[in-house]
Amino acid sequence: MEVDVVQSVVWYIMDHIDTGSSQSGKVKPDMRYLTKPRGKGFSLRMPTPEILVGTLNPFTKKPFGKEIKLGLNTRSHAEAVRLREIRAGQIRQLEAEALAAAGRNHVGRIADLTPESAAEWRQMRQEAENPDSIDIVLSNLLDDAMESRDPQLRKQASQFSKIVFRGDMPIGDALEMYLEERRHGNPYGYDPLATTTAQNVRSSIKHLLDFLGEGATLHDVTTDKADQFRMEYLPVRASVKPQTVAKHTTLLRGMWTWAITDKKLLRGKGGRPIQNPWTVEERGIPRRKAKLRDSDKRRTLYSAAEVSKLLAGFPSRGSRQGDLMRLLLATGCRVDEIGSLRLQYVDDDGAGFVIPKGKTAKARRRIPLVDMAQRLMAERVALANQLQLEVPAEERRLFPEWPLKPSTQKINSASQWFTRYRREALGKDTDGSLSLHSFRHTWRTMARRAGVPEDHIRELGGWEDSKDVSKVYDHGLTEQQLRDAQAAIWETYRQAGYLQAY
Image (cartoon, rainbow, N blue to C red; front, side, top):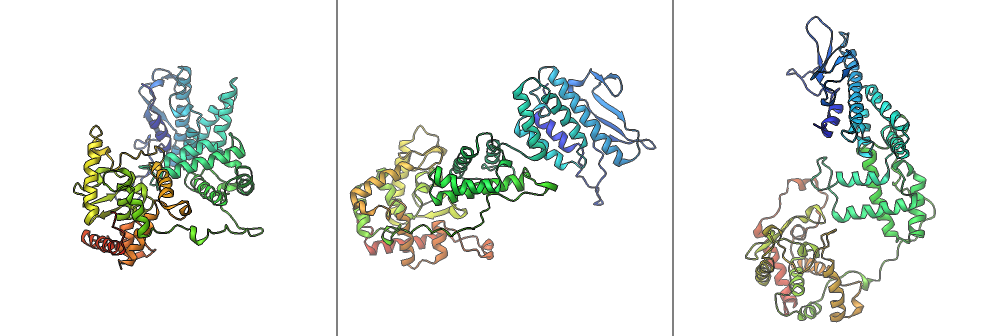
């Protein structure tokens, strides 16, 4: 039976740690793999690694049995713990050598020189009260690798050593570890990164490795290097706009915070955390701030006449274009919230739907529909089910006609279509001021004009609340309150002429 990788690592982490407590609340003495008969000294007692069973035990000069029993010749608990760690490290080294001799040196992390294994060894050393036994195993392992004739193995051993003792991890490997630990459902309690954010982090690292070289490590990024990358490479050589430079800096600062604080991969002399090189300090000649768009080119709302022109191109219900525009106008949702919505979150009668997740923490919300919008939604649900008869119920979408981009789960094709259509219907001079997102501007403005309370607008629209500590005690509005707010907005639409082509 092959040695289980996780069990091998956990054994090393836990063999010298005892987190138990007695009923009285006092911490129990660490007796893991230790025994002490009354009146006698401590002994080591542990299961024998399977590959060592039957081989020569160098401590007793006899074959290993299924269990290892070694006297430690001491009655001092502290000394017994120290000796246990040394013996345990020696036994695991014997196990590694036996595995290598059997041609199975890929089994178990003890003989694994990958960056992931090195990070685990680094953590073990940091958590150990006395890392001497761990260092004995590491020294033997690294000495054997460095004496190898294989240059690739020597290179791996050198990199492994730098990671374990300095946290000198290659940036590419750190990226993969960071994204894995920030995925949805991660066991570490980290806030998950959105799919688009993860893609943006990859883009930032790609630029950084183009600047530093593919083999660059976390330790290669000094404050001076970070400044050079941010101030010279990105804006000059890579022709990146100032806003995007700031975004790359923010994303890299987050990854380095993880490496410094959470993983403890970057430490200075004395073991203290290094300063995050991506923390920007303003200095030098102030730069002119980016010129704002002219007021007529800022994002704005649609007029009733503009909405009528847009909807007139799709007078009948049932088209993906017309249905999408009408639902955006009625709900104020973000385009991708509607475009990626699954039918399992929509009421069959079209009375409302739930946004399960989104751009902000408040994006998860219930949105009721009233009047013509409810009938439109019911017809759209029926049509979507007909179009997806071969698709499992839990995977059916409200708008299957708009394809989702796999990497972002967004309906980019809808925005591309609308740009062309809006120019045809309203003219090219609307570029920069009107888009699909302008339906959200329109709904928000109509909500205010209808006199809907601000907290009702925020809850329906999925905007973040003010930083009021009492908000944790607020569990939201009732369905009827939300429906009344929607009815008020709908009536304001009607009075302003927005529903003539609806």
